[in-house]
Amino acid sequence: MDQPGINRINCYNILAMLAASCVALIMPFELVLLSYAILGPAHYLTEISWLNNRQFFTLKKYDYLLIIAVVLISLLLRLPYANIVFYCFGLSFILLVIKGNISRLLAFCMLIIAGYFLLTNNILRTIFGLYVPTLIHVYIFTGAFMLFGALKDKIVSGYMAFIVFLLCPVLLSVLFTSYHTAPAAWAISNFDYFGRINATTLRNPSMNVFTSQVSIILTRLIAFAYTYHYINWFSKTRIIKWHRISITRTAIITLIWVGSVALYFYNYRLGFKWLFMLSLVHVILEFPLNHRSFIGIGRELKGRLAG
Image (tube, rainbow, N blue to C red):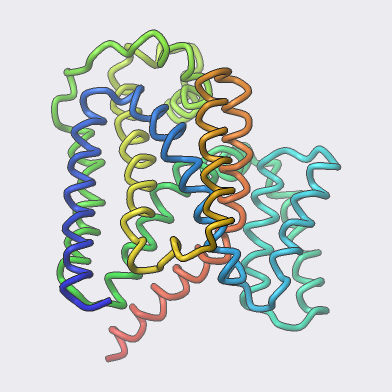
């Protein structure tokens, strides 16, 4: 895409971040749930489709099947989600940087041994079991994509968008901290999972997440991170062209999306379980791309320093 087109998209993204921040300020609890239920499945399905078209950004054509195999074996063994995410995150990196099959196998064996010991630590278990599939994915990894894009394009608007992305959570934390509207009854009854993020982060499982000032501020940040994560994906349509798929695949994605949203609003608990599994699948399949982004950032910065 030409520079004016990229500038327009960056400007749209800045406006989208500001809009998401404003809504997060007014109705944070509702925004989290609505974004997750409506924008979420559309993002998961279209990104999985796009990743599939690009070999999931792995080195070898069928490397992604190894990641899927690890997930299935972990589920059969009933391992905690923290273990599944840890092994898939590490395996994705191994598959990117190591080519030889024997070397890959040895590295993965070392990863399993490391996980056996490291995941006994409550902090690491919480990071991989709770934060990597949620806040780290929607904020840290999104920020990495934005920074990598800005470094590659070398356009001022890209750096401005990244700076706004960093500033929005800061502003949501310090502006109008005493202001909040009471969440709707449906939001209160359906906020269990995200309430766990609040309680774990603030280390207070007995607090009322809907009245605690610090919990409300944290929910603003979660609402912004999730909402903009989805918007950022759809804003890149003309850049990465994820919409160029067959009519049949479009119809399948649309039907699954409609069914997912309908299930969520018909039976929240059942719908949430489905959306969580769909979300976890897309998070895991995106790991190779996440690693490529961080590697790319390192190379760009190294080149700038060397230059």
